[in-house]
Length: 168
Image 1 (cartoon, rainbow, N blue to C red):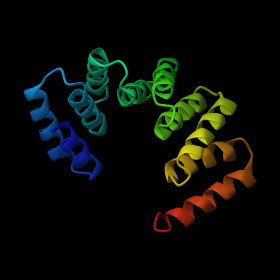
Image 2 (cartoon, one colour):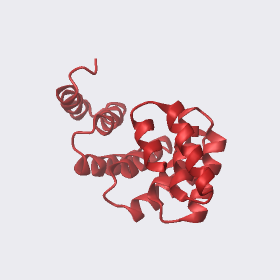
Image 3 (cartoon, helix red, strand yellow):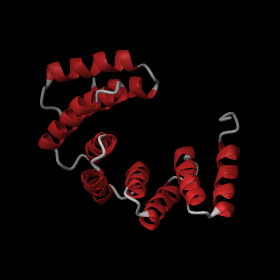
């Protein structure tokens, strides 16, 4: 059920995804995957504090669940707890170094913490892992633009448009 919930959430059907995640929790209230799914859905609905608690419970059951560290980090950063969010994203990167989104969110957290060069390094690693992820390309482009590295920003914008021509 947790997998079905993730699938439904990825398809944008958050209402059905939430129902499936709740059913999964009824079957096993300590399943880290179910707690993770509930947390992701709560986060998507803007229930940030509840999501953070779900991610924390998932981590209590399985501290090696990189996606739960990412979820908790996203919840923390949305509450302006940047240092704690960085710790969570670092945990995710250490657990799964090949997870592009872990590097992306770590880079975004570094950027919000005014650590631009660290941000660029992490987001470039996300780009190395997944060179066609428009969110990665766009995030790096924004940081380059703010850092007055306009040529690099423009190059990334062109790549993003080539990958997702219907984006505009």
